[in-house]
Image (cartoon, rainbow, N blue to C red):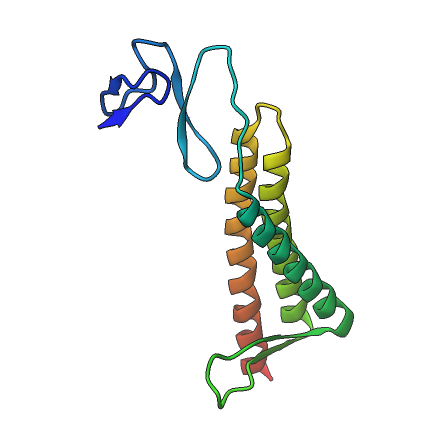
Length: 153
């Protein structure tokens, strides 16, 4: 059973507010629920270690995308010792570069969400959800286009 973090009153399942303190339950971008008094606002907090990893992943995605656009080829490393990875050239590399840019935007938005103290967590959560889906769609599209070009050649 859920408990209101403000007054520790037990909340019935499916309720969106606390009957005792009139707090409302909202969902943040990382799924943590918190009670918010009517008229009050508590900004989102992201741990320093998580922010470090998000910034690191942002830089890796940006570097990989720039490398792919500059050289016109990208490699998806193989986990086996015998394989040299999956090489993408031309259009599939450009699509994968776009996926990496979208991934970089996703990771940096998680850091910006921490520093932005305005009451717009829902917008950041929506952006994060959409960029995650768009990344996977572009990732899959790059592999599908690679296979289609390989078969037509």
